[in-house]
Length: 300
Image (cartoon, rainbow, N blue to C red; front, side, top):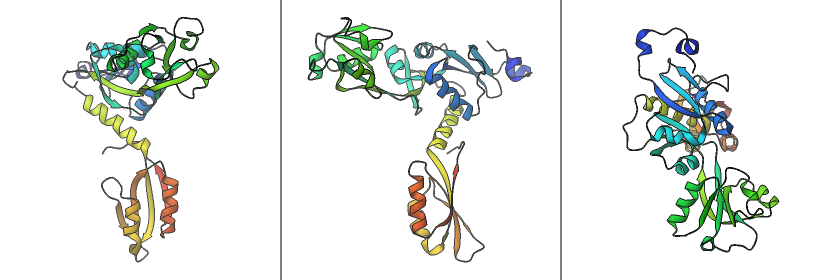
């Protein structure tokens, strides 16, 4: 564990005894990288050495613990740690007494069934089959909700090979492009089992931990900043209404008079997606000096 003095410098006695928000973070993989990135953008210190297992950030009143993604929901559900960042799939698979508090917009994945072509026509055909997966909890819940009885076989890896090796009749796994399944001679069958992404989790049916609201507000600010950009432009007063219809902003655009008579400067937050087309549309109705600026963080 990183000591308080090495992580943030000397602290006062009051700081040493201040309650810290204890947060579980994935220790490796794509979730780990993206989680650390959003936390840095939110103003929190993050480890510089992947071997560090914990990190104190007393300036912001938090302590981070870097754990296996599969274990995070268990630690939070038992109350050992206050909150965590993990995948929705791992949360549901764990069966822990933890719940989703905020989706985080990264680490998206989709779970599907797959089998040899012609093996299954509908999900009802799963009945009596052996289904291999690394996510037993997720699959069993899916089957139970639909009244389908099947044998679920736990595998930690190489799920695609299980059918060829005679271990299973069907697999349930993460599907991105489907190329891996095709290479294994398999095809996707039935509905999506689960749409997953990184989520912020808390203990279920428990009081909100001290400091959680500030932490969540910081993450919200980063997520909004990633979704929106700031747009500035000049436009004639006669065309303001048409321009504002295109850029209503969140609470309404900011407008200031220009030294040029009959013109105003307009500033508004607009969705990042489609911003270039929006610039073209504004230009067509007479806007000029149109600028886009990244937003690094915000509070709404």
